[in-house]
Length: 90
Image 1 (cartoon, rainbow, N blue to C red):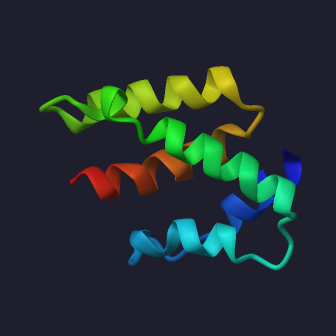
Image 2 (image 1 turned 60 degrees about the vertical axis):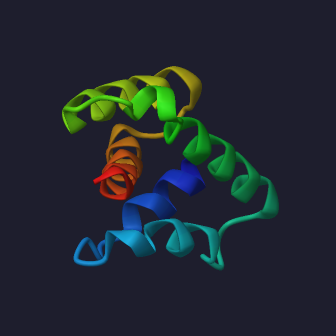
């Protein structure tokens, strides 16, 4: 997943975090297989059970742990995914 991590880490428009997902999925450097893996990981990290807390920081912790245990993404890539998901849960 090195390529996917690089693509994720290249996103820097945090003034518009809602564009993160499309940025990754529409990147010209991502293969169809990598798109499928990213989609699966993104959906998994967004699951209701991980974010169903009054404190958003609990969702961040649970989602981060999920990605660390189910992917080989870099810590920075995981942080960016979780940041984008947290924006969706606000």
